[in-house]
Image (cartoon, rainbow, N blue to C red; front, side, top):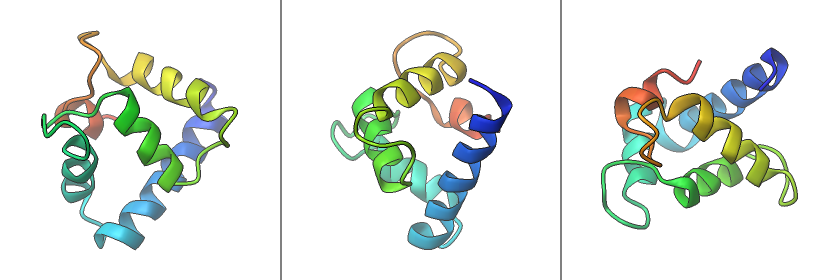
Length: 90
């Protein structure tokens, strides 16, 4: 993922967090981490929902965004993004 894409992603996700979660990053994480499975971690489908809400990409490109983010953030390769991994989204 290029630096330009990372900047775009960061700006859009931060805007979503400010608008919908009053700037509370942990609240936003918990919302998406518990949206479908109540696991406390974000899976690919929940990440897709976050990207949709943040207006990242479009329906045709959002899957590629999701895959790139999972590859970059999921350090232990378990298929989930933990709170610690989410905090490193910069």
